[in-house]
Length: 278
Image 1 (cartoon, rainbow, N blue to C red):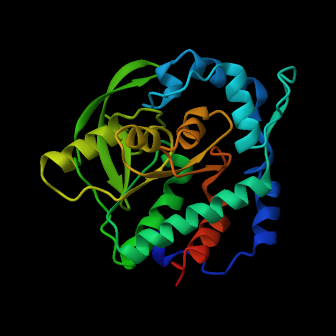
Image 2: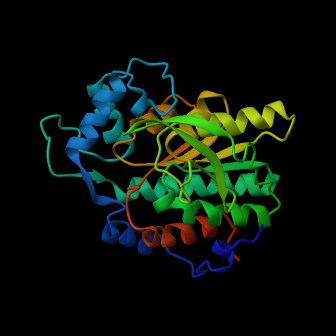
């Protein structure tokens, strides 16, 4: 599966120093364009087990808001001060780089083993290019990129209430589309990955040895016992809880709302570290 994202990928190698500088300059790490209020609100909602923030995860621990803040300070580098309630939030660029290294190492192992993989995103407007390029590289390395349950209809909760969505794939990457919509929808729902994994099991098809994604794609897969690696922002505590509880293998702290071009150096770095660049 050599898609356009693979052919058009800039293959220059990005050094650790250059990547770190890019993360800070682009707002993917350092002071990120994510309001502190949003992150704190997300921690409160997760503590209350609001499904909009649990992403399909049923956590083992209690995880109160204070404990979540301490976890996010440890994993992301946000301020651990509960009195800091405004301004931009923070992601430690060194933590981001270290997590990207671990992310790339897991991809390299999947490529070496030629494991079947499933990729999906709840941020198709921002991160589709990142995941599609990984999908193409993994496919070229001999991995089966799975696309089960294409077109499956699901009732997905949105800000306008529950709406019908269909599971689609672009460049080997799963996403949810609203009825009649051409583009994928932003979603936290775990229903798309549940539909994909359920269809694979029902059809006695190949199950993924690794799920790569974010939001409900990562947490929903982890809840079902599949190994997952993920990108997550400062207002995505579910992914870091899943990592802390041993159900997500790697959670990369990274701002997920930047323009899609901002992720290209990240993609080049990951491909190079995973020995998947060509």
